Amino acid sequence: MTTPPEPGPRRPPAADAHRVPAPRDPRPPSADGGPGGPPPVTPRQREASEPMSAPLDDRDHQDLMSLLGAWALAACTPKEAERVEAHLGECGRCAEEALGLRDAATLLEPQRSLDLDPGLRTAVLADCLARRPARQPLPSWAAPFDAEAARLDALLNDMAEDEWRTPVSLRWFADDQWSWRRTTVAGVVDHLLAGDGPLARAVGLRDPAGTDPAGGPPGHLPDAGDGARGERCPAWQPWRDRTRSLVRKAGELGGRTGERTLPRAAFGDPGRFPGDGDRVPLSDAYLDRAFACWVHAGDIAEAVEYPYAPPHGPHLRLLVDLNARRLPGSIAGRRRAGLAVSPARLTTAGTPGRTLHLEVEGTGGGHWYIPLDSPVAGVSRTQARDAVAHVALDDVVFCQLAAGRTSPEDAASGVEGDPAVIHDVLSAAAALSRP
Image 1 (cartoon, rainbow, N blue to C red):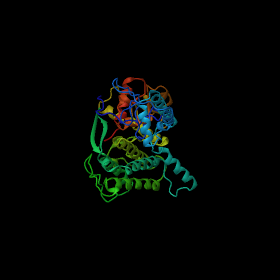
Image 2: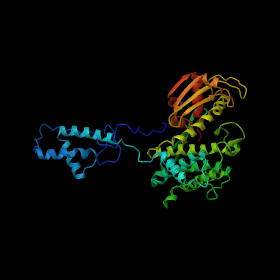
Image 3: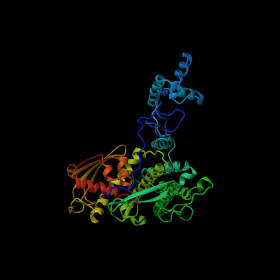
Image 4: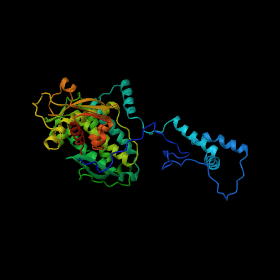
């Protein structure tokens, strides 16, 4: 197996990471004085030939010392900050105290993203619906798509003119190797619009403007206009209209998870959904689009260097579950292609076989028992207890692996059992990724 040609997405820094706020500079500073923050303040050393400057009188010194706390909190006026910083270059005692105060200031409130928590929207909607029930409730299986489309739309709404052409690299894992193509932020929105098309047509929706502007070749770059906000990316407004129509359609169709189905042939990709029958659960089709929406929103956010949080915990668990249920089919597909390294064992459909225990940690996590010998093999309690291997991953990392944004070698946080089986399962998880 080759390693991915490009590094995976950067995770946002932990909220409790050590940071030193820069006075009068909103950018996050670095501990070593790198970009985004001033270098540590140290007393200036006089040259041997330099005459001694007149010492400050005690009143001026006390006055400047009284400003150190305000300076550490970036609360000084520009003129006061200038005086303090000039003094810190001369007085070692004050420079040392200023550094200590600036370090302490970071403990008062750790720096974090200004974005709202992904669960806040869900909580507000739940409170509103408790007061006035919806005439057409949204099924739980469509809630992740609704939330992730709204979050991405908010990110796009704040996009600057030149950011639409920011380069973005889309990657996926197929045939035991990494593939990628380059596009732009506008091209990613174009790609999402095209990806929503099969589901929209399957539920009876027409294209937003009668035609599908995303029908160009893969990676097609739409021209970013200089006109109104909605014209900066031709696919943005049609994508927004289509996602809203899909959410309304989910409310109209309703039903419990897995109750309604669509023809598998309508999506043109048999391996995209769990199982191997002729029908696909409507709920899985919506979860698939929610997953794509989150993954590509992360691609855009990484390209424009903006922090982007994972989905709300219950929504993330549905996305983890979708990809865990897709694993048996991916394992079987790799065996048929001769890519598996663990020996195959024949088993009758519906009877127990070997099992891998997949443990996903985090708010979206849980436990799944993956059949290894047949995608339709049953998993009994005995087989679950006697799993031949155990793999533990973080919920976000598992989804990044299934999306082709991290490699199998970098994904697992803990493994135990048959190494060949573990290799096959992690590679099968990476093979879930799509262009």
